[in-house]
Image (tube, rainbow over all chains, first blue to last red; front, side, top):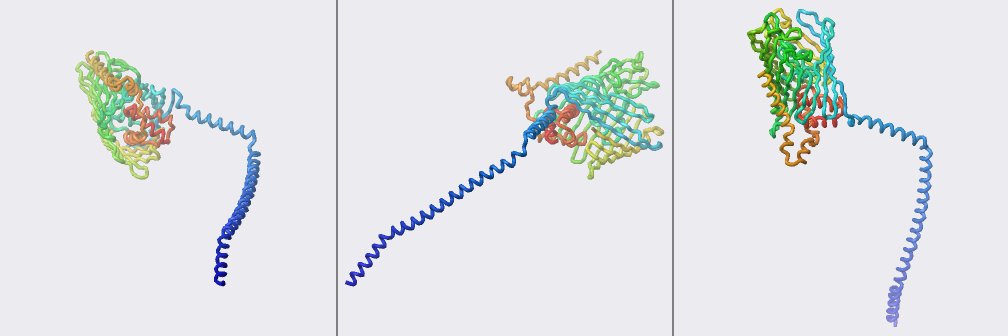
Length: 427
Length: 104
């Protein structure tokens, strides 16, 4: 009995447990549900509170900003923006105009001390260049030269004035007075801020070996040479030509500055320069011109004087390698003999120079130039070795100091050594 | 008289060379459209090439100036002058100008 009772008790207990387990599970689920419900209700309340807070802050923000921007301030701001837009439009206006203008040029002041003379600030040059451009068709440039000599006399000259028409990518038509395309110095290097020494090379002054300028027409341009990677540039011209005079039966220098637009002897000359660039920094040029000239005096052909053959031949090169700049030129002018002329003999003027410059640290630049000019009259011959040191305040603002060892005819100024200091500015 | 004729012949030959050089692209263009494209030089200016030319061509004559020295308008006028003096092609001039105007 007891064992039966025990077994019944155990079973009842087990069954009760089994029966009661879902109930307790239910009870715990109910507990969880209640706690979750409470939690959700709490969260809802908190969210509602947060929404209310955010709403209040939004109102506060808008109340903070709005009072500080008035209608007057908005109007002032709009006016300012319009002004700025106008200024910006004006700054870009040049892109939409047909004609534009620029004034450039160079200026220099020089002190020179020739052996046997007193030193003096005797170099004063101001060369403004006027540049106009009309669309992409026409370019007008003109350089006016103002000089004051040692007597205080002022001289004015139009160094060049030409109208240039851009025909295509490879050709520009040039008409007017232009610097001589023979060689490189006269055309590209003579400006005070570009010339690395204060003086011109021997033989490069008017009435010496190298022609200065002429009045005529011509074509210039540059073009690549097929697919070689090399380039060439050219200049051809037809011009009035120089004037020649004679003194004591000997031809004087060839006056090639073309100070007045005239062709006294009625002859034209044809010439040009052809240059090649086999490497990006090496240029080799060949120049020449040919024509007829006649002896003139007082603006007219001398009676009885006939035409004589006139030739120019020249060669030049320039090369850059890192800080080294090397260049040289040779040019000669020749006039044939004419037995019937008052100055019957042939005449020739020739010159060459070679120049090396090297950029040093601290904006310094050392320059060496050797030149040899052989004139038609030997008394005017000159050989020169120039040693220079330049200080570059800026690429276009240079102080030059050079000493020139000159060798000429004994007793002539060409035989005097000289020291020159120059300040040159390109604007 | 004979000399004047020789000179005129030489000059006319030079002009012919110039004209043929300039318009040869048109003469041998495959089609009218290609001819028009070549005539108006639609090659885009090249900044990198312009920078190289700035160093190699410009420095052959003078110290090279800071691009910031001049405005875009001024550089256009200056570069056109340099094109004439230095014998640059039109494309070379446009490349150099692109470099200068973007660098100032």
